[in-house]
Length: 266
Image 1 (cartoon, rainbow, N blue to C red):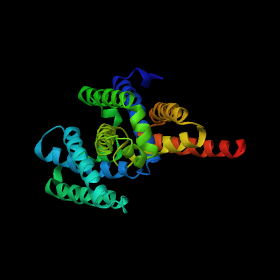
Image 2: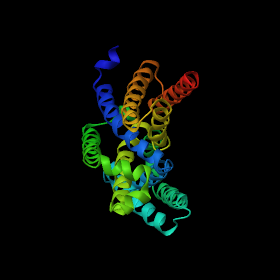
Image 3: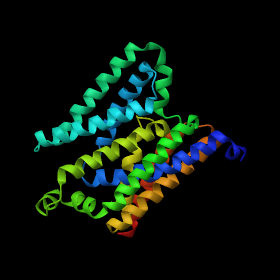
Image 4: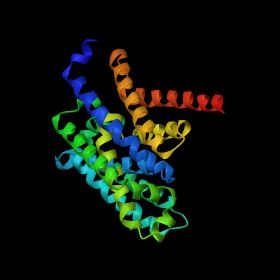
């Protein structure tokens, strides 16, 4: 139990607890809108920003955030251009993100090891600045969701009806994309860009398997996120495992259990 008293582990728990609220929450909206892969796309674009941040000598997470926000605007623009093939926008932006990341990698051969922490997660290296960024993102996301919960509910389940009722659909689509970009940029140092999509989608999948209403699904998705992240960190700390991978495997285990419970209940 000595690890619980370690300062680096306490920072990891705080950062993990915060991101375990926002990532699953935004992931639920994305899954319900059939945009689950947007998380993976923005994560890859964020890594390109992180790589450029190392090249320019600026805070990598901030540069990753800029890239993710710009990419979110690009996805929304392409979605409008290809209305019948909306998923094409995600594929295009992801391709561009991977291409930029590969170029930046080759331009700075000396920073590859540092970038690895953003690819696979390095929650034990969170510092005060990282925690402030994660806390700020958490406050912004929760505030926006609470203020616009009715509009986001309508937009999530029937975008056409939302537009007919006079809701500024384009504005809210961009807002949701930007919030997702914020969450992903804050989360990549916790679980890594390669696993951040799992933190968005797996709790949502578990929640949809167990809940019977939208309100229930929001409560369950946050509870599941907290249990998985905090338990995963504790298990990884005790057994010296990769925190990001442990959290995701724990989520997969909970998903299997929840699907089994649903079959038994039916």
